[in-house]
Image 1 (cartoon, rainbow, N blue to C red):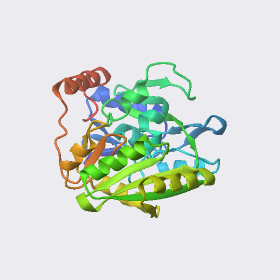
Image 2 (cartoon, rainbow, N blue to C red):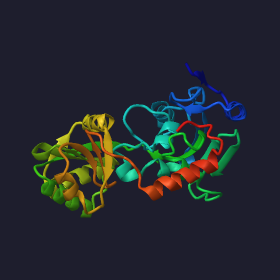
Image 3 (cartoon, one colour):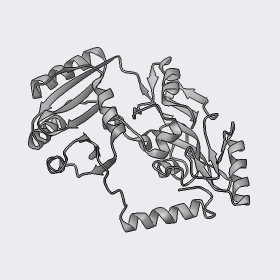
Image 4 (tube, one colour):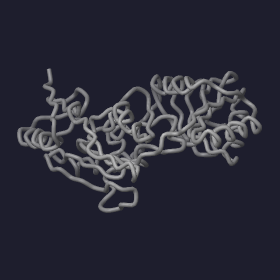
Length: 313
């Protein structure tokens, strides 16, 4: 059985990885596979919250619900809403996002700075704590989607957004891939500014769910305009729980070009589709083997960060 280590400080995490590197011990981060499993459970503090700048610096082990509960007191939020309640570090390492990605982007779009502990125990920081800071290499974006292969994400500085005064959902019923693509294009070319657009795709019984957020007046106007544009009807907020549920059950994901929605849907029996991101979560496994060039580049990057092979892939 592997031992589990829960460092309480960045220095403790650095010492663990340095010691493991010296002794030839393999380490896995937040999952089994190594001789030692490194957990960020105890790294769960909000270090700084600059409400006036809409930024916060947190330790990677804090969960989204815990962080947003703290931020809500200042009328702010971290606009990441993936399924479940992952830690901030897991969101970055797994490149996790949810319906709100349509408006606010993926983790890489919300990261301002990062502190990472490399496989040999070196503590490295890049970026900054404010939105306009561009100091150093953009290490934060490189770590998004790294799945713990490049180092331990220990601290993260994040861009925040105001909590909306009003939130309303609207649903359009679509009956075919052509209908879905046409509805999306009409919505996309309009003056509407939704926070989320998810297609719950299963052929003739599909639904295009749209989320509007903002002031009471703006949301009412947007919802009315959407109804005039495409019809549809209001939907309960639980529609987004359904969407995230589909995402959580997905066994694979594919990408498609911006204008390729109709073609992509014609080949899918059932999927959660995010047209704005050009991605679809499938209920069946798909090959995720990267192209040779991408695979070779990923291996070169990993070898640079972890030449001793301490971190388990």
